[in-house]
Picture (cartoon, rainbow, N blue to C red):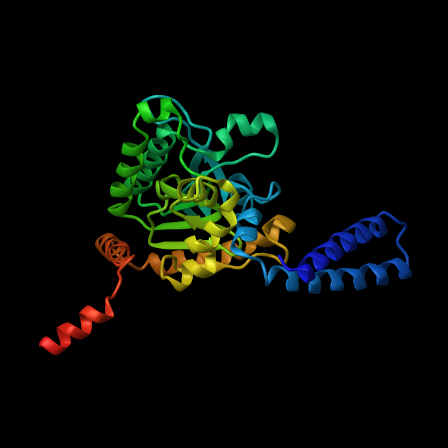
Length: 327
């Protein structure tokens, strides 16, 4: 971060404190005008600061403790939500949540990874890192959606699948791989939204969809910057360098054609205004569902297959020109 950006961040913090102090005073014309002036200045500074964030700073923002989590989005976006539990094989996994709901009157199934804010809940939710039973529960709910012809909405916010010995013994890799295959051929619309962290196979386990969206300050990657740094440099201190090299920001992902679109966030990030953040997500989900509802089951599966089949395709200009000259 440049010195100028650092100074601006400090000014943002000071303005936030001033606004908080003024808000506690007895309202009058003077305080109201001053509050409005400070809020406008704060919005302007936030836009300047957040327009120059580095990839590593975006990663840190995606992990903000006050960022909206799965159940926050469920509360704002869906009605009549009924949570369902268990994978019918081993146990329930609190790190993966889901159930039945309605979206603007449309019956649907909602699934997502759930983080937490206080220590007790973080331990209960396993810091948002699902185990095999979590992925099997998610797929059970998706199969239920297919049976009753309901669209599926998934929300991703996880550093990755849990790497513990027990999870590996119960088939962590197999559970994720099985989800990839089954989601690829699910005969109902699947709309995926990465709301915070989109870490590796832990994210992919519920990430195969007809539309894949990423919030502006979220990231989606084959590995966390810290994990990449530990492998390449044997030192997590190089996480910032890794974050830039991995091309994991929403803008990079859109440019590479790995996602369908970026969902804008409130100025300063989704944590500053959960309701507005959910409203912006809502608009994108409505549009996507409207487009997908017109497709038959066969068209959905074929289009989804072709979409993922093309990801990562690289054209070798040298080989292409040689082929052209040979022809």
